[in-house]
Length: 388
Image 1 (spheres, rainbow, N blue to C red):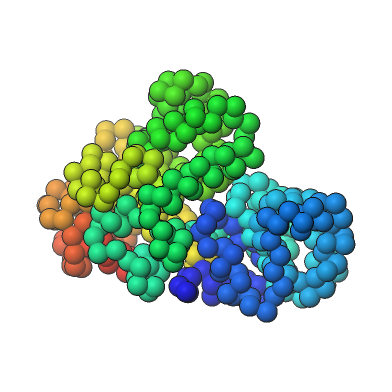
Image 2 (image 1 turned 30 degrees about the vertical axis):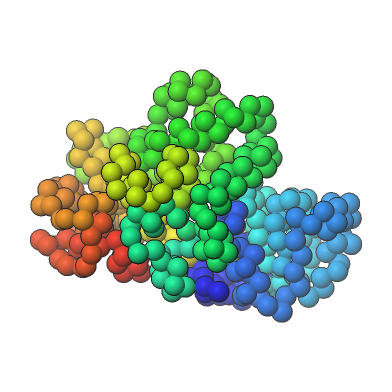
């Protein structure tokens, strides 16, 4: 079993807060993580119909079974429990009494903020980071395979064919989560919307274009994007707000949490197709963003990742902000380093002035070196960048 990078931080929070909520996408390994981190804690899954019925019908009796606390898995299935947990947690000062997990981020955080504010810490578990894949011996030998396989744990530890697994995941997601989060009458239309979003990965979000292509209005597109965000399928990367004496693009860019899911939505059947696919560069950019987000969230840090683009077209793929400095990061899927790769970072660094810190380029080649003050890292060395 792979030791998840989130585990030390999770254990630290459980020693400080009365409860901890682990949220994240379905099948990202939340149950495996909490059971490994708290092996002596009683475990209950609210996916079990009998347990869910008791929790809904008689929440006090349900919780009374766990005087020493418990792991309550998929707690979003019974949101009414949060109000009753509040009383139990207020009755004792003991930290780490309840460990909760759930897959619907926005609704869970809203419920927690209403009932358990100040009592529960919230962390996010995403699919494997590349360093975790390396540690488990699961890393793929080529960039194309890495993008194609994605990073969901079952694909690796259960040795399931990625095409078959992602097909099943999408069916389950659309049939279950979409129905729970949104009243979509025509599920095939939503599936088309998903595929259109995959085709827009790494691009500035255009709700009007997505709506026109899918045959729905602007409001519906916004609602559906909210569902994709709430269920950890897609994310919107916001532009960096610092002016740097340039007029800036204010529209977010659309990405997914996992490239394996994107390749399935695009109908890619095997890794070799990614060698010449028109979205290869966007998929690699998505992968780099995902790795940096995992590294930050799994260490308990705020994401603080943006992109920067002026109205004149000058763009830096990622801007990492923190501790009074900003760091420009470019993602290039090519294997041969070209001198023009350095141009956007040099121009942006000059504009950022003293705030700019150690620009970097992650590329599809190998090795680590410095060129004109820019760190060049091959894709397999991305754990070095994540750890900084």
